[in-house]
Each structure stands twice: as C-alpha cells, then as structure tokens.
Image (tube, rainbow, N blue to C red):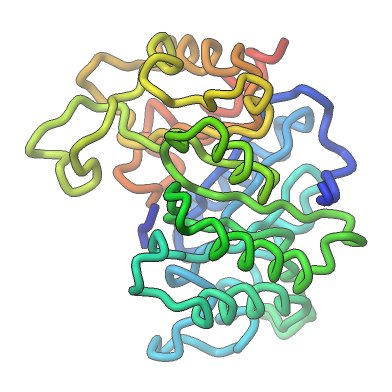
Length: 307
C-alpha cells in the first residue's frame, strides 16, 4: 500500500481488544488531519493506536528541498511525531516498502530504511527544542505471499528486531502488509510467525468503477464483513485471527454507506476477534477527516463494538 514472540507486546494493550491500525500517510502541514488523530487517540483510552509514519515512501528523501535531518526528515515531522509519542495509547511505526521482492527494491535498500527508522531518537522540533521522535516498529508494505520469498522476509524481520532491540524494547511491533491471505495454510503459519501482525485484507469499500480505478486496481473484493471468511480476507487458520489486521479505504457509495452502516460493518469485523483494523473514506489514506469514515467515527465504532 503506497500513498504517498519473541516479540515484546505493548504493555498497556488490553488482551483480546481489537485496536486501530492507522496508515497515517498525511503530511503534518495538514494540521486538521493530525489534530483529529490526536483528539481521537485522547478520546479513546481503551484503544491502542498503531500509527504508521510515512514521510516519503520511507523515512528519507534527500531530493526534497525541505529535507533537513538524516533521522527525522524535517521539523514538520519531528514536531508532529513527538506529539504522537506523547500519547500514552499510541505507538508510532515506520513505513518500509518491500515491493513484493520483485527486484525493484533490493535487500540493502530495505535494510537501510529499517536502520534509519531505528535511529529516529531525538531531534529538534520547529521551536528548536529536543523532540522524542522514536519509532516503535516497522510496517513492511507490499509483502509477498509467495513461498519462494520467505527467506527474504525472514531476513528483513530478523534484522529489524535486532536493529530495534526488540527483545528488550518496551514496545516493538512488526507488521507485514500482504493485503491478501497467504494461499497455503501451512505456509500461512510460517509467514505469520515472522511478525506480530499480518494485514490479510487491504481493499476498497466501493464497487469497481472507472472513477476509482487508480485507487482500487482490479482485481479486488469490495469490503463486506459478511463475506470476509469465504472471500479469503481472514487467515485460513482460525487461531491466527488474533494476529490479523484489516484496512479498508475509499469508504464511499456505492454500495451505500453512512455512519450507521459503517458502524455495523466495523462491529461485524470486530466480532471476528482480529488484532486491529482501520477504515477511511480517503482514496489512499491521504486524509483522516473525510466522512463518513473519519478517524473519530471509526474509533468510536471500534470502541463501542468491543466484546
């Protein structure tokens, strides 16, 4: 998804609660979107928010004239990330593209991004004050489900655990975004064993059309919780549901959707006992305040739906 253990679990996360996995692919200059996230996190202390940080399809872009810091990007980002890190029920995670191991990104390029994220510690904010910009996990985007790529992802996830000191870190979460369920149930267990969370369904709400073709390339299954199992949106192994995540974008008609319909679909999804979810009305995660699936509406529905 682009726009732009032995693991240590988050100490404050309640057992069996479904939480929020939010790809925050929004530049901090869009203060309305970031303010909405902060307000929502503060309003839902019972939920844990995994916030995926993505300045430039990764942690750095030296060609950007506004790029300032090797670890921290610039003061827009240091100020904004520090604000998230001050929230007790939020966890920042760094975005890394793996391009399905199709050759367009080398192992060294992915490792360089992982290492860069691991070194986001303290940097100046826009007022010149030291800011806590620490990152607490990696979102491995565009993860291949092909068995031939297992060693590639085993190497990357192992390297990330070492780079972040995961065995002793108070927070560390590795997320593999496959976007689909691994086709082989036996291999599914192997792949899930590499991470804390696997995104087994990334899709659009809206039916296929010419207007959404850019954000929702075919083939895809429009989201519907009632068909989630039969359409392959959840793990084949039911005991892995607790490590599965679902993210849905383009939550706009058709099919019809309003706040009540959204809440019903979220409730049905929460009832599966998955790890986390997120819905957005944005085309590709570029805003958090477009309705009906605003960050506030989604968090409220998830909170109410808890068992």
